[in-house]
Amino acid sequence: MEKKCRLYLPAAIVVIAVLSVAFIRPFNETGNIQEGAEEDGDIIPTMPIDCKPSHGFDNYRTEQSFVINPRNSSEMYVTVEYKGMYKSSDGGKTWGLAGRGLKAWPRRDNPEMPCYGLHFSAYVDPANPARILLPGGSAPGRISQPMFQTGGLYESTDGGGSWHQLFKGDMNAYTGRAVTDPRNPDIVYVDTAALPQSNAEADPNVIFVTKGVVYKTTDGGGTWNELPTGLISQLRSAGIFINPANPDHLLLGTIALRTGTDIGKKVSDEQWGILQTKDSGRTWSKLESTSGMAIRVIDVSSGNFGHIFISGDRGGEEVTLYSLDGGATFNEIESPVNFARFDIHDPGGMRLLGFSVYFQPDDIFESSDGGKTWNAIGKLPGEVSNEHRASNIVWDPNDRNVVYLNGDMGRIWKSADGGKSWNLLLSLEKLT
Image 1: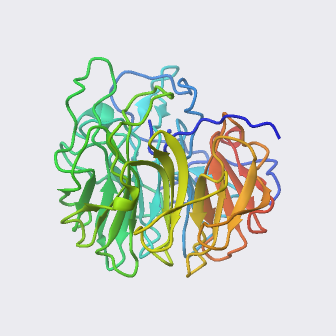
Image 2: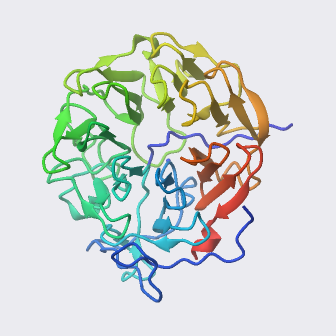
Image 3: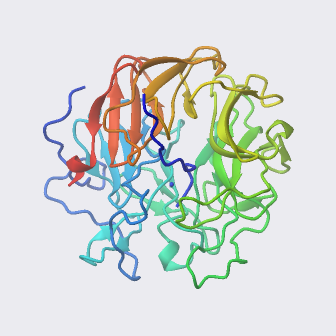
């Protein structure tokens, strides 16, 4: 089979039958669908922007923002670049805008209409699924400046009915992912980046953090501390994970890569790999087994925190690795898989599903030994292409046979057979 080169960017970069009709309607204040209403997200008083792809990779991305209520799998959320936050309460049959309170830029073609930024992820609080945390949506900058107020960390406490900003003053608006402490959901960790603004007039020596690339609150967002992960130029996160069995223990995958829209840019010479803390963020250390690696993709088993999957750049070579001992050692994977997620229903952390994000074969692969070996079990959906990536794998929280993919062009696919076959659940066309 002919190999095709796909764009391969880190997730945190500024990168069922087909429904015949999808009803896209706004939600009222209770989160229920409201007939005839219009979206009322707050529009920032700044210069209007072209609300459409312009960089060659910003194809209405969904990144890792598709999430499901762990107590009610009929309730799901996704953000679509330029379009906004959407919610379904019926398992994806119908969707509605759920962005009341989310800041947006004015559209150039109609400045009275909102244009929404990219969000790298969304997080449903396991202790209270009506609470959703939404990081991302901005370039590096101060949250106090209007043009960066699409970023930071938004919170909804009513299932997407309304949103409010948790970040304060001079905090960095650029964020990627959030996690809560299972002992106390008021304890929240959010990753950020040591990046300057990317516009030509900005001072490249000015970054918006001083100690590290993780923020922490212990009072639900009333106050925040910047944790001392340490800094190198261009450092950003590829993912932050908290150990359910020992929440003082967190892992942070990192990559040093400059900001901006140059899709051919190379990673920095110095790389830190995985950072970890075992004292709730007071001190951090590097996992020596990943020293020198720029991590583009990372996942850690929620059932077995010692099982880790990573892929990225090491010494100019793309590598994919797995660990079964908490990162003390990593072994290389002899497979085209470079994106994978652990099965949340597997307490041993042995089963993963994965795929290649940038070249053929266009298979879905499965591992039953923690990432050591992989077998093709099906194909990626036909809509996935070099230009329009798949960007995440999500398990239904109640049925281990049901798996979802989401990706560019506002797409979500559903598999009812564990990833062997797929049906399109949502697409950009259904949002227009």
